[in-house]
Length: 171
Image (cartoon, rainbow, N blue to C red):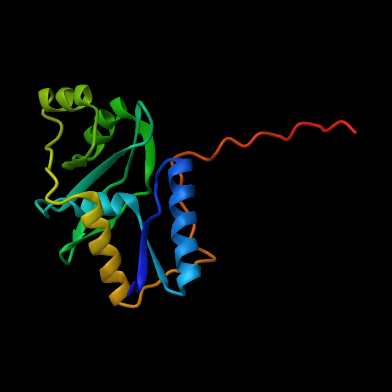
């Protein structure tokens, strides 16, 4: 009774996205059903109530880095207005000084405390889980007929994978 599969497309870590998309595409092809890809930062932003005109979701992108983008409220939903970028967690201070916006998502406790001490950021607490947010966004897109192509749906990696030059083979 499954009509579609919803999958987060990133930004995110190479292995996690590669596995998630491979599994999702495998199910879709095997069952002959639709697939809907949802941007991970949009899913994170959608976890939070619309409390201001702007919001900056943050998601972990390694031990000391985060992925973020700026979103603006538009008709009861969030629209991304800035390209996603990966920055060192402490660099969020400079980003917020340039363009203040409430933060939503996971951020290192030390950086969070520093931002609060400097009164640089408000933190919006999520109102639902990531999976609930992802499911709601994906289901709405599927109902609206906004289905992705299995062949062209691609992940958005936090960083490009490290691909090494193959070693020379001896004959």
